[in-house]
Image (cartoon, rainbow, N blue to C red; front, side, top):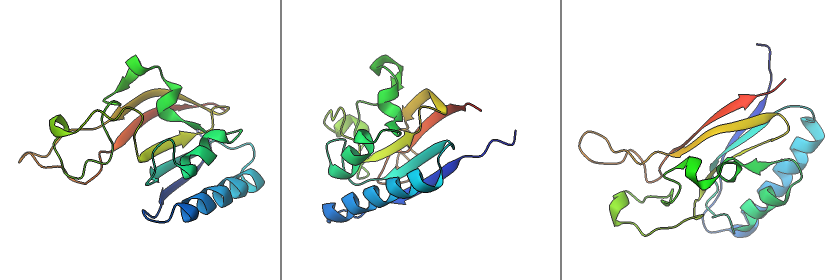
Length: 143
């Protein structure tokens, strides 16, 4: 439908919080300078939970929001599980509400979040395909 949007997928380092902070700051600054007026979706392994500085910069920005918190808890599927599974079965993990290291952010002025799900399914042999559970969202883009 000739709708353009900007998407970035990232994978932040595990052991250097200062690098996560710097990357987030530079990314948001670049987006503000170059993509004004366009919908933006940011996905990836932030290697920090919602309290980590990389995520806090995102949450404190004036134009980006977290897709998970855009919906009330009853509309989030499996949000109570930790997104970094470490190949551990879901039923053996502690309840880590709001403790995700994988995130999907969006620009609420241009996009509506319809669904949010942490996919906890396993392969046919009962194993996980990754040490992280994928997050899927349905988004509605506005012109």
